[in-house]
Length: 255
Length: 285
Image 1 (cartoon, each protein chain N blue to C red):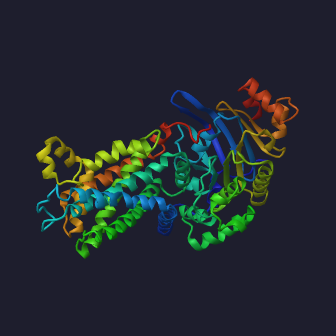
Image 2 (cartoon, rainbow over the protein chains, first blue to last red):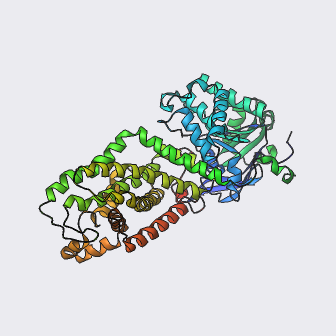
Image 3 (cartoon, one colour):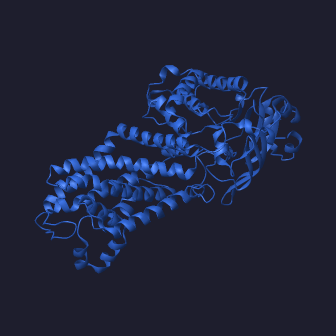
């Protein structure tokens, strides 16, 4: 099942502390290209800290993070170049139009105007929002903004897409649309996706599931396997059992 | 097993000069667009110095006589004297505002978008500073245009000669703002910075009164003014506007610009990051 060649994302024994408080403790897992991996954890599990480390907002204190074999600490430029990010908080410029936001992002990746326009059209069509490209972001709905953010993250053709709780604040329809778009990207483009969420119903059978709880990885593997290893009958049950026991030994069984 | 496919990753290593240029252009363009969209910001940036020039200076015109001091060759009106100080004040506010807005969460999001660009972080921050400076230039020239109708008429060539001085002072004050934005943990509102940075810097400088007059009043204050980089920014602008160079000011402002820029870049470096000390990202964990 593992693809040959480098992992899209490889987290190796990463620990991070804010002063005395440990946010991440020896976190290790990998996401292969063409995989939809769900990072499941409650609020406070350490998901956003992990995202801050992957995107190099903070330096990794212990351990190593690699994106397609590029060490984030040693060659950040190469690592960030193949990485697309959708942050938990909204990061679009509300006063600028959809296209202007995308053009700004393209410039940040050194993509010229001509090329950027063509790509913007392409990615906006992909997330089905091309008809709003002239609108100010302020006038879009929450779900539409998220789609624009995904389009923006795809503009420089990343091979790994990481999304931090992208469905927060969206209604059921917008949520399932968004999940649909991203899953489609995985199957059609073969990119690796790390999707952080606290919503269990966003997990499906084919996904890779990583359970993060209180800064530790409690389970990592294909969904049926994680469920079976916990002797649970579904993902919700498995998650409840894992987080209730908080048993770190499960890591060895499932990794 | 992984090394063989490394090249697949893409578009080759490093970035071309053209890509750097595109990135810089994009950052300046966005700052310009935002400026155009925030008309209130432009208006208040103009009203502030105009209040000083049209009201304060008029009131003080008779009280405060300015003798002939370089770079002026004749007696001048008080309004003429304080104009360079007000130009620097516009840049001071602009530098603090554009950088400090990063402190707010919503803006922090924009900062994150900037920082996930694969180009070197130092380059990104310098580009942002240049963009902020470019916006401050628009504000300063708009102010000069209005001031011209108020008998502030420097030599025509001075408008051009002052440009490099303004670029330098704009960068210095922007870098200072960026540095403060990285250090400050939380900012309740803009008032804190007004009280502790903008007002002291502005009043303890040669913006409103020549330093020899300050010395007559308080020797201590005189020394404080001398050590205030803002004083030197004002003098650099004042001399340039009248087609002369104040070398001391030039050296001090250049030195401070480099110092503040390096400090700001270090502050935004993830490994020694003051950002990291600020605590957890984006509220949640």
